[in-house]
Image 1 (spheres, rainbow, N blue to C red):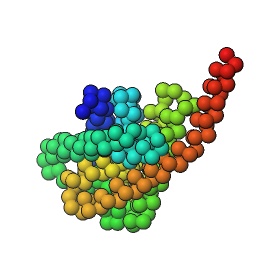
Image 2: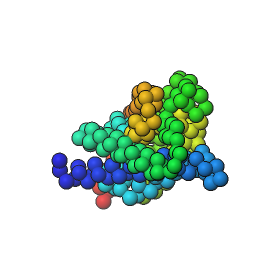
Image 3: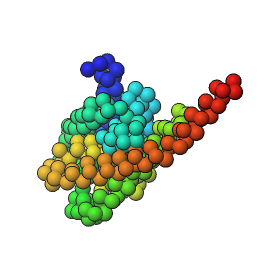
Image 4: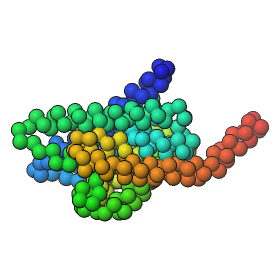
Length: 247
């Protein structure tokens, strides 16, 4: 593996590790104490802040995906090279499992700790609000779709340069504020996989939804935005060519 690819994979690993450890850590460690008062809103901001901070820390190395659905959505939108897709997804998934394992070790250090759902995602009886499979699928599909639109739009030509991490982080916060009661919020197959492996069989059995729905929503958004921004890119090319001719 070339050094450039190694740097990219390491960046994706650390970014995804921080996302899962920080976001799920807020849910498992802090939200368990009502007196702290962070609640759903605190967990939502924790996830948003992980993406915001790592987007600036390592996003310039790998693009800051930290999410298999984002990688595939950007690939569908022509924004991710074929050679990066599989290494990124493997790194993201391994990082999520490592982060969940680390969180488990820390949380289990408290006497009498009960893991419960361990910040896993679920539908039906495993949904925080007991939402059915169709409602959960639509929620994950739709919110990942808009998450990719935010990511692609804020990193496209013409967007404010250097500020993409802010709308992306705030977008993920909003997504959590909407969907924590429905699915406990995934929009990220790796984030779902790590905690589910430690929460146990029923959660693992529902992982299919938290891979399929986010990836489908992300890839649709990627394909759609590729078409949406095509005309803008053509217009920018024409303007550049006109300037060269008149220069």
